[in-house]
Amino acid sequence: MSRERGGRKGMQDAGYESRDTGCEMRALNPGSRIPDRESHIPHLASRIPHPASRSVTARLYIMVVLTGVVFLLQGCKMGPDYTRPETPKADTWRVTASTAESIANLPWWELLKDQELQRLVRIALEENLDLQIAAANIEEFQAQLMIAKFDLVPSLNYSGTVFGFRNTNSNVLPIGGGAIPSGGKGGGLSLSHESADIGLKWEVDLWGRIRRSIEAARAQLLSKSENQRAVILGLVSNVAEAYFELRGLDYEVEITKRTLKSWEETVRLSELRFKQGVIPKLDLDRFQAERAGAAAQLADIERQVVQTENRLSILLGHRPAEIARGLRLTEQSIPPAVPPGLPSDLLQRRPDILKVEQDLAAATANIGVAQAVRFPQLALTGGVGGAGLQISGTSIGPFATFKGSVSLTGPLFNASALGYQVKATEAQAQAAVAQYRKTVLTAFKEVEDALIAVQKTAEQRSALEQQVASLRSAFTLADFRYQGGRASYLDVLTAQRSLFESELALARTRRGQLTSVVQLYKALGGGWSPGVAVPGQGSEEKRRGTAEPIESHAASPVVP
Image 1: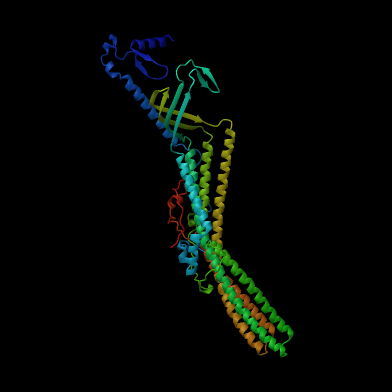
Image 2: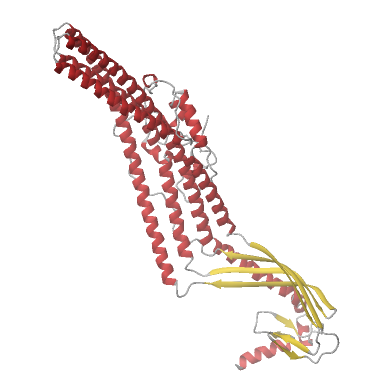
């Protein structure tokens, strides 16, 4: 203690006073002469800076240090960074080992050659309501992303107040609901006050809560963008499948009407022969039953035609109406080869996979948000403005006003609840990982199913064409023998029934072959190459597998 007092006394003897509130030292009398004992060190006075300049330097130093600390803390982000989960590796497909360029790289209008079908697809891309909903969802999440970004920068606000007061009795002064004697004189008291200021508020993102929120919002936006791509791809596929189904039903109507006409001719001739006593009543009843069966089947197929037209009309965004036709089913072109490409391309092309991956990225970012909420939040506020005051005709001002504050808030009694919130977001991320892997496996399964369907429907069509040719020849021969009396009615009945069923099976197989190609195109994520960005999207960013892809705008339907 004596040493401390002695040190302080020596500093006071030298003309300086030490303050406990800081490291600043100031001269007791800056204009006084330095004591004579300092003459032994003549350069000391020239080396001591002026107190005012030293104070400014210290404050600048403190501001620089605080700014550096803030920027260092800005680099801290709670929670894990997103990485793409491991998925089963596959070098080739089960059905085919072809590595040729995938059919999915073709635009849909090069795959679907029917001009009327192309017109229907274009109408659907412009007027389908599901696609309009998907586009509106993208606009919503674009706005949500911008809202999240504004939380990262300071917010500015303004305010203004005008206050006036007049008391006609100068002997009392109103206070609250009562009054106190003021002992004043004159005509009373008048008071007015005006002020205006601009304020600033900034939450310093110490733990990355806001930045993780931006990551989550960006991932959700990309998820909605991929969902729009999925809607577009599904819409093109659904319109094509419905159109091929409609043309297949039209072909079945042709076959059934032709068969029904043949049965009617057979019944007419049988009735004549029955009246002549050539054939028994049993033969006539059998032929009439077959004719009635064909008529019932025709009615059922015509019902399916109208219902398919109605479904296709809804896809077009129209009320149910008749659909214009283009090429007949037998005139539709089928690609001679449908190479699926490499399995690894599927993860970069299928919109449903990319969508659930962005959902996973958003769930991962939300873990950081939940963890950051558990830590204190630092907020800086400040304002600058002007005000004026008038009291009974005496004006004070105008004058400037300045204000500033720093607040630090954090959870206390709800810390445990916030901990469970972190566990909840972690569980959601785990579910998103499982959903991603499930979607990948489902995608591989759909491609394999479509590949085997394309292969086997082609083989089935070839076999059915041979069967129809043979049965047509058999029916012609059986009818000729029956008319000549050298065969029974059972031979004709069996041959015509088999031919009818085989022709219907061939029509359905042709439709199934066209549909399987469309389904393969959809399963491969057709219409977008891995190296081609969807309009308004940064595909390169998305292929990196990071959680920070660039913002996406609403992808417009691809129409040639």
